[in-house]
Image: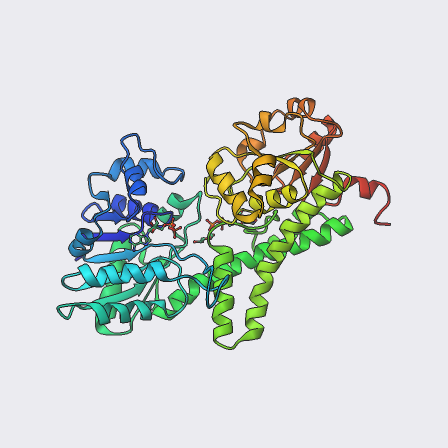
Amino acid sequence: MITKVCCIGAGYVGGPTSSVIALKCPSVTVTVVDYNKERIEAWNSADYDLPIYEPSLVDVVRECRGRNLFFSTEVAKSIEEADLIFISVNTPTKTFGLGKGRAADLKYIESAARCIADYAHGPKVVVEKSTVPVKAAESISRILKANSRNGNCFQVLSNPEFLAEGTAIKDLLNPDRVLIGGPQTEDGQHAVRCLCWIYEHWVSKSNIITTNTWSSELSKLAANAFLAQRISSINAMSAICEATGADVGEVAHAIGTDSRIGPKFLQASVGFGGSCFQKDVLNLVYLCEVLHLPEVAAYWQQVVDMNDYQRRRFSNRIIASLFNTVTDKKIAILGFAFKKDTADTRESSSIFVCQHLIDEGAQVVVYDPKVREASVRRDVNMVCSDPERVERLLTVSEDAYSAVQDAHAFVVCTEWDEFKTLDFQRIYDSMLKPSFAFDGRIILNHEQLRTIGFQVEVIGQASKQRVASGFFE
Ligand code: UDX
Ligand code: ADP
C-alpha cells in the first residue's frame, strides 16, 4: 500500500500532477519538493499566487494544500518518508558538449537519483515522469544500485506525462490513457501494480496501459514526435496554400474529416513552441544517430526544420508586405506565450518573430495577457546578439490598445481568446495607414477586418492583393 508520495520537482509537470493525485487519493499524502526556495514559497503563498498559471489549478491546490498536499524544500526528509517517488525535474536540451543542441541534459535526473540513493531508507518505487531518452530508467537504476546503502531495493518505472499546458488539470483528470512501463520481474510488476492503484482512484483500468520500460520511454518521445509532425505537415501545406490560393483551413477540414486522419492538431500556425516538441524531436534525432540510424534521424529532423522555416517565412511575409522594410516601423506583437491559457514562453514562436523584426530594425511592442515583461526581455535577449539594440527597440505593453497605438501593423502570434473580441475599429483608428493585420493563428474575422480597412495577411491564405492582381493566373 502506498501512503506517502514524494515528487521531486515543483514545475509544470510535478506541480499539477501531484495536486491531482492528492485530490483524487485522499488517503495518500503527497509532498512536492524542489530546491528552488522561491518556487516552493509561491506554491505555499497565502494568496495562492502559484508559480505557474493553469486553469483550475488554484482550485485543486486550495482544496488539498495542508490536507494531504504539501510543498517543501526538505528534499531529504520527504524522500526518506515516501513509499513512491516521482522524478519530475527538467530535462532541457544540452547546450554544450556531446549531443549539444539535441540530446537531453540528464544532469537534473541524475542528481535527483543520487539524492534518492543518499536519503532513502528501505525499498522505494521510483517513477520517472520527466521525458527522458530511451533507457534512462536503466541509468537511474544503476545509479541507485551503485550508491544506495543498507542493500536498499528500488524499482524504477517509467510513467510519462501527456498533459498539455493550458489544459493540464483537464488532461490529468480525464487522460486518454495512463502509460506505465516497468521491469518484467516479479518485484517490477508489483511496483507497476502499486502505481496503477494510485491512478485507479479516478482512471478506469482499461485506460491504463502497461508495457516494458523501454516501450514506455519511447512512446512518450514518439507521441510528441507524431504530434509535432502533424503541425509541421499542415504548416508545409500552408506554404503551398499561400502560393496557390488554396486555403489551409479548408484543406485541414477536408482532410481531417477522413476518420483515419482525424481533425485534431491540424491548425496551421506560426510554428509550434513549448518546452516539449522541439526538445523531444531533437532528442529522438540524437537517439537515432547514436543508434546508427541516419535516415530515421534525418526524417525526424525535418519536423524541426519545417518549424524553423515556418517562423522565418511568416516574419519574411510581414517584412515583404510592409513594402520590404520594417526599419523604425512600429509593429505590435499580440501574444508572447507559446499557446493560449499559459504564461509559459519556452520556445515560443513569438520570440523568433520578435528577433527577426528587431534584426530588421523594427520597433517591436509586445502585449500578452499573462506573460510578464521580465520574461519577454529575457527571452528576446537570449536570441538577439545585441542587448543595446533590444533595449532600444523592444517595449512591452500593458494592454492591446496601447500596444497598437501608432503602429504600422499588428501581428497575432498566440491564439488568446481575448484577441478575437478586441474593438478593431478602435484599433484601426489608432494605427498608421495603411494598417496591416497579420494573423499567425487564423483566429480573427478577416472579412470584418477588411471591411474596416485593414490590409489582412493570414497564414495559409494567399494575400488578397496578389489574388486580385491575377498573380495566380
Ligand atoms: C505537448 C503535448 O501535447 C503533450 O501531450 C506533452 O505532454 C507535452 O507537449 P504542450 O507543449 O503543452 O503539450 O502544448 P500543445 O497543445 O501540444 O501545443 C504545442 C504547440 O503546438 C503550441 O505552440 C501550439 O500552439 C502548437 N499547435 C498545436 C499548433 O500550432 N497547431 C495545432 O494544431 C496544435
Ligand atoms: P517541467 O516542465 O518538466 O515540469 P520545470 O523546469 O517547470 O520542468 O520544473 C522542474 C523543477 O525541478 C524545477 O523547479 C527545478 O528547480 C526542480 N529540480 C531540478 N532538479 C532537482 C533536484 N535534484 N531536486 C529538487 N528539485 C529539482
